[in-house]
Length: 129
Image 1 (cartoon, rainbow, N blue to C red):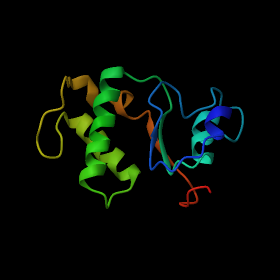
Image 2: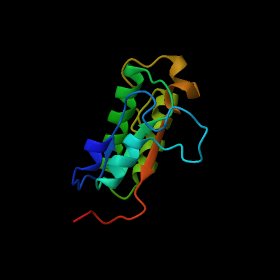
Image 3: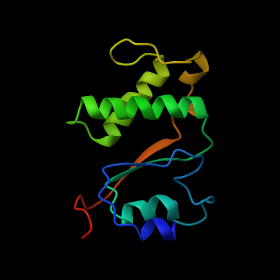
């Protein structure tokens, strides 16, 4: 986290797709945002995709690819909106254009498959100098 915080980023989006990248590991304190996710925001990333619990590699791959595809096709959407539409695709097994999600099985519709992902957005939309 300290190395990430020392970076000088101008990234629109950083993706932390490993397990538990949005949480500190315990919920005893008021601040449950992980040091890692917070560090990338501090370093200048405008948004971070992170996870609240264990994730499935195949589902994660398809979810993130769908979110990026949606964001590229619809630049008017926020990163959160793009992620939400990607979650809809994972739940239904179909992209918005009707293409099937590769490797989709009905268990992907369950919230444990897609709900660990969140978007953390910088309060300031200005990159650090």
